[in-house]
Structures are given as C-alpha cells and as structure tokens.
View 1 (cartoon, rainbow, N blue to C red):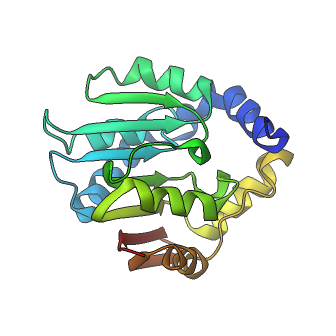
View 2: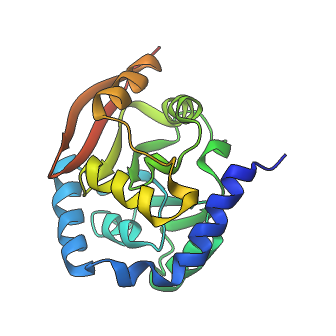
Length: 206
C-alpha cells in the first residue's frame, strides 16, 4: 500500500528536480565533498550505498575516490532526480535505483560503506532504516549521516520551502547517534554546529 505522506515527498522532489543544481554552488560543493570523503577514508575498491543521491552530485564525487573495481548503488525515491543524475553521471560502476530506502532488500553484508548525504530528514522511519543499514553493511564498515549545512539552517529551509517538508526536520546529532547505537552501531564521531552535521557509526554485532 502506498504511503500518502511519502507520495507527497516524491511529487515535491520530482517538481524541483530540474531546478536543484541551480540552487547549488557546484564548484564549492564538489570541494567540500572531496574534503569530506577524504576524511571518511573511502577506499578505491569499496561498494558504497549512496542514499538520496538526488541529481548525482554526491555520486560523481564518490566515483572520483574509487578505482575501476569500486561500485556505487545510488538510491533516490524521486524519478525526476534519478533521470537527471543518469544524464550527468554515465559510468558502469554506478547502479541507479529508484525507490524509498525503507524498501531496501539487499543481501546481508552487502556494502562497504553507506553515505546518507542531505537525506536523513526525508526518511520516514528512522528505526526501520537504521536496522536495514546495519543488516546491509559488512562487519566493521561505516555509515555516515552527513549535511554540509547546520541543523538550524536545514530545518529553517525545510520549514519555509513547502508544507510537504515542514515535518522533515533534522534531529540533534546526539539523538541520531543514540538511535544508531540502539540498533548495534558504534558511534565514532558526531558534529552538530554551524559548520555542518555528521554522525559516523561503525557496524558492530548486536
């Protein structure tokens, strides 16, 4: 059964897909991606789940860190966003998937890393997704919940952008960290200030 709340989100992001990149300073964004991914320690041969890939900016940045043996599964629930991403990033190392991440049904221990860039507030059921992420990560591998803007700025943008996004608010990093710990993650780093937002957690056995 379809979720009316989720459907409104899909409709909204489909409607703005063509404008999305015009709202970003792409050169600055790419530099910040490069710095962040270097800090994360992305290895060239990883299989990475790029959650909420949007128009492919995060995907393109991750590809630069990978060798020909690396792979990305890029997921977004907006068909409009995915279609734009496919025109920008043409690379056989990327598998594009259009669905809600709550429907993730990969095999156990599939991914070497999961990156959730600028998407966590748009996920309806964080508990379900945290469990799915834990199941789909390889032992010892990492999850990054990441924003390049402050939580305050993100929540202001969402509360003012559209009625659809008013409840898509980012919780304090401490709350996100506590949720991940509940489902078997070991939190290694949190950031929640004017410079941005990050929760990095490592898979540990339950």
